[in-house]
Image (tube, rainbow, N blue to C red; front, side):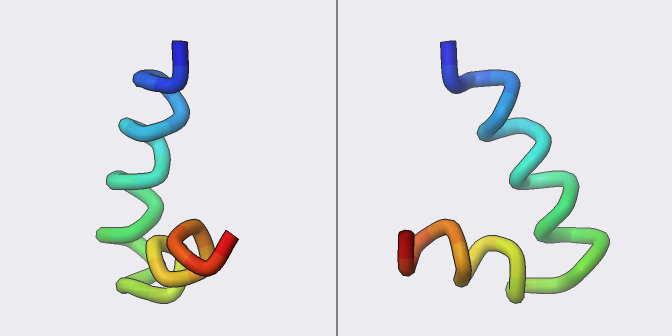
Length: 27
């Protein structure tokens, strides 16, 4: 069920850089 969110996170990570992915890992 989190596949959609993961996909969005990957796209966001490419757009905003690694910042978004870093925040997700911290959470």
